[in-house]
Structures are given as C-alpha cells and as structure tokens.
Length: 275
Image (tube, rainbow, N blue to C red):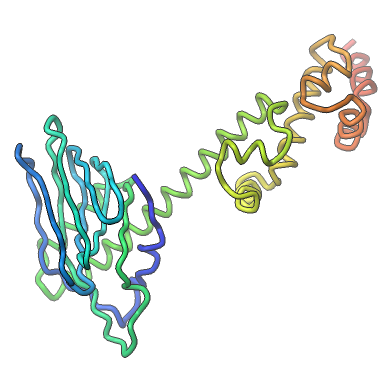
C-alpha cells in the first residue's frame, strides 16, 4: 500500500472556511461478481472515501495500481480520473464507502482541496468504522461534522503508523549494526539499507537514538571491541580487522578516545581485575 501523507495533511480539516457535505454513504456487502469501473467527468471537489472491512481487491487507477485488504483506507478524487476494481474471488471484497464534497466558502480557491489521491492502512480500523457508522446514523446536518472527525482520525492514525514503522526500522537497523559493526564503515553503507538521504537519516538517528549514524557505528564497534578484548585471545591487529578498521592504529586511537585507555591497557586492566 502506498502512503501519500501530503494529501491528507493538505486538507485543513479544522478550517471554518471548509464545509464537508456527505452525498452518499453505504456498506458494500460481499458479492461473487463484484467489479468496479469508473471514468469520471468533472465533479469539482467531489471525493470517494473507502474503508475496506474485508476481503481483497486490486485497483488500477490514474494514480497507480493498488492491492487492497482489510484495514486499508482510500480517498479518491472524482475529477477527471479513472478507476477499475477487481476482487480476489477467494476473498470477497467488502467496503464501507462515502461520497462527499468539500466546499470552500472563502473568496479565494484553497490549495488544501486540490485534486489528489490518498491511500493508507489503519492500525485501528474498528474506531474508524464506528465514526463512519455515526455518519450513517446521523441526520444530514450532522453528517458533515462526523465526516470531518473521521478524516482527522484517518490523518492521525496514518501519522502514528508512520512514526511507529520508522522507529521499528531504525531499531532493526541498529541491531544489525551492533551485531556486525564491521559491515558499516560509514553512512553510505546505511543508506543502502534504509534508502533515505543522508540528512534525513541523520535526523532520524538523532530523534530515536540521540546520536548521529556515524557516532552509533563507532559506539557499536567500541562495545564489540571491549567484548573481544575481554573474551578472546585475538591480537589487537586481528580485532581491528574484524571490526572493519583499515589498520590497528586507527582502531587504537579511536578506542582510547572513547574509553580513556588503549586496547592493550584495557585488556591488561580487565585481566588484572578478573584475577
């Protein structure tokens, strides 16, 4: 599922100049021959919201191709767009859908309601469904209010999901570095794992680890070096090579800067304390 947070953040949900008008809301029950083909004409600021409640489907659209499953949410513009949906016949598609308009009551065209497409998966689909049911059961006057609440909930769940996934990826990467620090000589090696720009990767490490990626690599090397000095009979040169240093002098210099002792001195002190 592609996540495009730009669209949902561009809707100023709290703006008093935007009015949300629900045109249709319904629950689609699974049927064996379901398919969907829609080529839209010009429906200004009209959108279709899907909350996928079961089954699987595949959507080909003007914005790309998407595989859908339970928990996914889509907001699709109806302005000069084309959609073709087919379901997995072994997992019949089920969806709750809402057609709505966003009306800008200001004097100027608002950039926050420009045509775009949004797709994400919701960690808490059940709560989103409760809000959608509130829209279904409300009178026409109240439906716009509850739709606004639902859109905000989708926005917040997408943000939380993105933050959680990023933290998990950072933690997984850090565990790899700790286990094999010799494989990561610099931030370029990390980019191959994470596929982010250097600046963004530095920001993420500072946010979640309070260190730059380079500092984390050095810290991991030094920690592994301490273990090798204590628990192995490898020479200083062999340890330096295992940890990815170009020579033992670079290793010894960096180790002493961090620990206050040269590797040989550290090993001797630990041995004397142990015995």
